[in-house]
Length: 179
Ligand SMILES: CC(C)(COP(=O)(O)OP(=O)(O)OC[C@H]1O[C@@H](n2cnc3c(N)ncnc32)[C@H](O)[C@@H]1OP(=O)(O)O)[C@@H](O)C(=O)NCCC(=O)NCCS
Image (cartoon, rainbow, N blue to C red; front, top):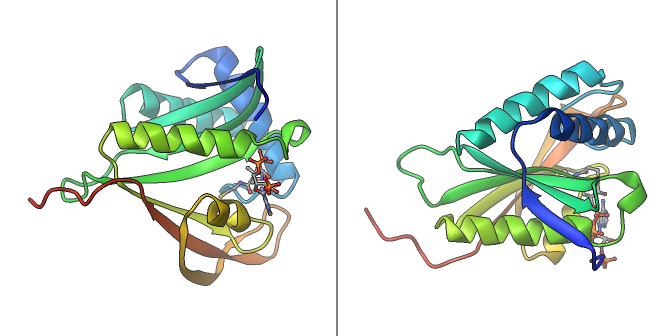
């Protein structure tokens, strides 16, 4: 991890939305399967992050940003809005690192902080999924996530063509107390 990396939760704000949107547009253009098709209009990216950060400000999710100085290097989201019978669960998604910063441990560091925050909130069961084609399955395996299985033809890749999705989970704490 770069020594100067600063990882922190993000709140709604024009500069933050702008930086996250540029990152999302670039990620999709480079084939990252993060729910959108290429070309992703900047306005659509801004609408997405505006909603995401509003949800974060309500406590429904945590959107983390990894910075080098003022420059946003990567992001990940921890989704916390689960039904009453699953208070111990959280989902991880929207993990992306700017192309210029890939391969330097940014995503791994973001995942570590997301897991720490999840544990602090007693979220002991984490789930996530990633595209079969060009996804991040090797990264999640390295981070100790258990592969559950694959659903074929799950979504379109940003530049077209179907890809499957691989489901993963990880326990990061003790069994939750039974209700
Ligand atoms: C996946 C992604 C977030 C990884 O970001 P990163 O900051 O480069 O990741 P790291 O530097 O922390 O990599 C950690 C390890 O995982 C490996 N890794 C990361 N992404 C990988 C991938 N797509 N395929 C294979 N290995 C990968 C790295 O080689 C590294 O292993 P090493 O330490 O043994 O060299 C980045 O490639 C990205 O933004 N991709 C597009 C969006 C995407 O697919 N997100 C995942 C959606 S579920």
